[in-house]
Every structure is written in structure tokens, then in C-alpha cells.
Image (cartoon, rainbow over all chains, first blue to last red):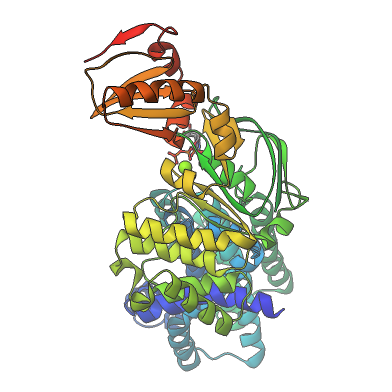
Length: 246
Length: 309
Ligand SMILES: Nc1ncnc2c1ncn2[C@@H]1O[C@H](COP(=O)(O)OP(=O)(O)OP(=O)(O)O)[C@@H](O)[C@H]1O
Ligand SMILES: [Mg+2]
């Protein structure tokens, strides 16, 4: 157990703490994306969408952890050959990824704190609502971390990994109704947005805060679909990721 | 450490074999040096044994553990520095070494202590708190070597650890490896044949994916038809020899056997020609093994006289 803690701590130190200490500018990086969309949506809606967008920013932040983990892992694997050194060590793939996933959270603590403060101020949510949102965030985080790990093991150089990030980010966060209610999207486009797991995550958060009304069946369905998405990607990552190369 | 390799072959996506039917069985603590030209398959073999890459076919065991089926067992006892590994630029040497040790399961405190010690041994204590990106190329490589030196793994893989090191640093590292090898096995690849000769308790010669030989330097020599080399610092001599004669920059080099050495030396002494006699070096042996045709081209018919100059 102590050993696992050391191994997890090593990932956190290398990927976030030492990076933040040595290059404080990286902190602005995670802050910028969610906040800029939040600002745009808020201004464009004359402030009416601020609470919904603030919830959306939380979700985006979790998804962003996965995309940035994909980038970090690819870089460490392809350019530093760190992953090969880890493969030839007692650290297992699961523990390495767990450490890296936590390191992404640590990395985004400043952003997360700011977003939580905004949400506390502008969104009225019950304790139960917060619990729901918390669970929701964990699910979407697991989803994006699994996806990030899976893609990183497939990428063989940094250009490919940039391409992966470039595709995932907008597909999961900018285009789907994460920062605004899904009802803003006209049919038939609305069907398309149901292809993204973030749509469900946002719907759950928005309903927990009372901005959309879901009947019981829809509520259950939304959760089930999000859980299926997460488990599906998690299993794919578990089965298809290449820890040892073939 | 006992390493058994049984008929390992590796084909990447291409049709060519990067490794072809490699088999060997070594049981030693010391250094196994693997040499071979670019693309010979050294890295492929090291990556397979260090559980980073699956072979296409064949079996391998490290201390009885199946490399293919029980990688997690093997990973407990190995440490590896890949050929293209780089010290992470935003870390300092001490952060690099200690975090690696933490991945190996040491606590933060132990890892810092052991890391400092390893950096001190490699002469990096003055820069241990600089960013890696500010170090010279050789210092960066040393940081990586320090990471595995500091680990207590009984089997260490170093893929070209001394490439890019200056001559003195290389010699320092040799001393260190000689010290370290006492209670473990180090498998290292290198393009410096002198290094393989000095360090290698066993030397494996890979060529085009085949293991041409794996033995100690004396047995490699004994497999040579001409295990001695006489260097003559004069081109204008007329003499009858049995062996291979090569033109070198400052004279001639004759490869021959022991019996002939005793015949040639008195003649050289008599003619007052400057010369030196040595056992053939690993580079001579390597050329013999790898450059097919050396012998055919340059061997002189026995007892044929030759004129050179
Ligand atoms: N990932 C890969 N995909 C396809 N072919 C590869 C891959 N890695 C190596 N090869 C091929 O396998 C062969 C052996 O390569 P390897 O890297 O093992 O050689 P090496 O002896 O380590 O060479 P060097 O001294 O240049 O490091 C080469 O022909 C190389 O092109
Ligand atoms: Mg190589």
C-alpha cells in the first residue's frame, strides 16, 4: 500500500507539482479555456446563461484533464521514453495512470477552485444537487482520462497527439451543449449532440441545479447512458491500450 | 541472474525480421555487452527482455520468470534506460532520480537520499538542483544512468549508455559499471568496441537480427583463425607470411596465428624493423564476424611471398 502511494506520488510530482514549480506559467493554461468560453457565453446571453455556463465550465475542466493527460502521456512516452522506463519497473499501468490522472486534477486545482467559487456565488444548488454534480464530474473525468490514456498509447509522436487533442476538445466540450441548455439546439442537430457523453453530463448538472426539468425516465436514462459511455471507454482503455508494445 | 532465451524472433509490421531465432542461456553476475551495427537488432532484443516489447515468437525467462507471461514478476527485478530516453527538461537531476526511485516503490525520503548518493557518485552533485535542460548532453545521459544505478534492481538494461559522453566521462562510467556489476547483471549495448571488450564478461555479436556469437573475449579470440596481430611500422619490407595482411595508416598489420608469430618475430628483429605484437582486439574480431569477405580478399596463399609498398 505504501508502495502504491509512492508510485502515485511520483506521477503527481513529475507531471504536475514539479512542472508547476518550475514553470508557473502552465497554471494559466488550464485556466484559460474554460474561463474564456464561460465569458463568451455569459456576454452573448447578456448574463442570463452565466449559471449554466459556470456548471459547463466545471464539466469542461474535467474533460480537459483527460485531453491534457493524453498530451502529457504522449510526450513522456514518445519524446522522453519515460513510459518504457516505467514499463520496465514495478509500477503497473493502472497505478501509473491513476497517478497521472490525479496529477491532472492537482494541475487544475486553481481552475477548479475558481470555478467552484463562481458556482457557489451564481448557482443555487442544494446539498443533494452538489452531490449529484460531484458524481457526475467523477464519471466524466473517468471517461476522459480513459480516453486520454487509450489515445496516448496509440500515438507515436507529438504531432499525432496534438491531432488527437485537437479533435477531442471541440467535439466533447465546445460543440455539445455543455455551456448552454440543450433546448437551444434545434432539431435535427439536437440528435447529433446526443452522441457526446458530455451532453449527458451537462444535462445532469443542469437538472441538479434546476435549470432543466427531466422526468424520472429521462433522468434515469441520462445517467445510464453516461455510465455506459464511461464503462465502455474504460474497458476499451483497459483492453486495447498498449502498455507493452506489440 | 539467469537469462534463458529460446528461439526469439521479432518481425515489426514490415516483412523483415529484426531478430531471427535468437537463443542463449547465460547465468552470471557481471556485464553482458551486446554489439552490432546500426539496425542489427540490439534495441529490439533489449526491449523484449525488459518487457517493453512482445516478440513475434519464442520464449524468454529471467531467473525462471516468463518474460512474456509473467512480466509483472520480471519487472520487480529489472531496471532499464532506453536508447532514446531523455532527462525530462523541467525536472532537476535530483527530482529525476528520486521520482524514478519512487516509481520503483521507495518512499520520498529514501528516494531523495539514494538519488543524492547516485548523483554524487556520477559527479553531478554540483548540478543536482539545476534544470535538466541546462545540463550538457553528456550530463543529461549521466542523470539517466544515475536513475537505474540508484535502484537496487539485480538486472539492469542500458541501451547505449555512453553514447555522447566524452572519453573521460566514459571511463568514469566504466569504473562505476565495474563496481556495480559485482552483485548484478548489466546488459548493455554499445558501438564502442573497446568498451565492450573492457567491460564485457560476455560479448554478444548481433548482425542482421542473428546472434553470431555470445562468449567471453578469450573464446571469441580462440575462434579466430588468426588470433594475433603484428603491427609493422614499415611498408617496404619483403617477407613471407602466413596470414592476412592489411594496409593501415602507419604501416602494415598482419593477422596470424601463434606459431607464425614465433616465426615472424626473429625475422623482424633481424631486419631491425619496428613492430608490436598483440592479441586481436574486439574490433578485429567484430570485423571478421560482420564484414563477410574480409578473409577471402586479403588472405595470402600460405608461404606466398608478398611485396608491399
Ligand atoms: N518500431 C519499429 N517498427 C518497425 N521497424 C523497426 C522498429 N524498431 C526497429 N525496427 C527495425 O528493426 C531492425 C532492428 O532495429 P534495432 O533498433 O533493434 O537496431 P539496433 O541494433 O538497436 O540499431 P542502433 O545501433 O541503430 O540502435 C531495424 O531494421 C529497424 O529498422
Ligand atoms: Mg538501438
